[in-house]
Amino acid sequence: EVQLVESGGGLIQPGGSLRLSCAASGFTVSTSYMSWVRQAPDKGLEWVSVIHSDGYTSSADSVKGRFTISRDNSKNTLYLQMNSLRAEDTAFYYCARAPAAHYGSDYWGQGTLVTVSS
Amino acid sequence: DIQMTQSPSTLSASVGDRVTITCRASLSISTWLAWYQQKPGKPPKLLIYKASILESGVPSRFSGSGSGTEFTLTISSLQADDSATYYCQQYKSYLELTFGGGTKVEIK
Image (cartoon, rainbow over all chains, first blue to last red; front, side, top):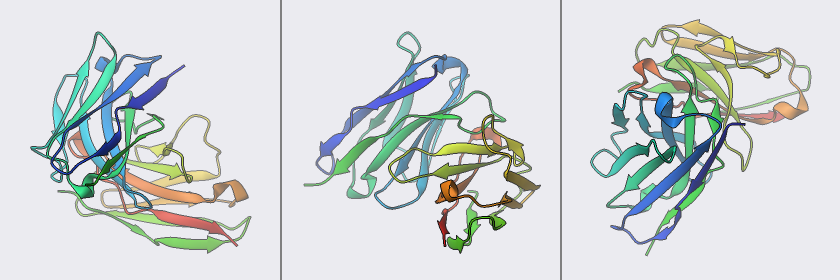
């Protein structure tokens, strides 16, 4: 059974750093297209970052230079390193997988809440 | 950057109605488009990918069409369980994966 479990969220002060984790089971992270998507409270979905099966990464302009997506193949886990956090980064953060480039994201985690506030 | 515009932002319809949601891309994305359903407090659920392919297990009353810059999601006979917010997402080349603003579907 495919499962994605996010962790690492919490309350952090502006300018701080946080690393989110997404532990995967039932499939292999390194052969999938893995994304981070966020959703501010009562707002729409916003794509954050993606890592391809070949290791290529891309991020939204709103987080470029501050957030870094990566994976640990030995742990079958996806990460999002978030630096220089701002109030507008407050959101639920979901990890999602797509089995191939022609597919949408077919499995999602339950999300982890990041709150940036002093 | 590719912008995705969904319309309407909200709609109210009765059980049994045919419902159509539109998504427009700011430039051609071929058929690299997915539709998701999201209920409160839950992650999104994939309904359709590559513009018109129904994800396994999704009821056949859901269908998608379009290519290039114009896409539609149709619910042929609205059910009470379809009350949710629907999002389109483009994934051209999987370099940037932009979402539309969402359409909230309410049952009258």
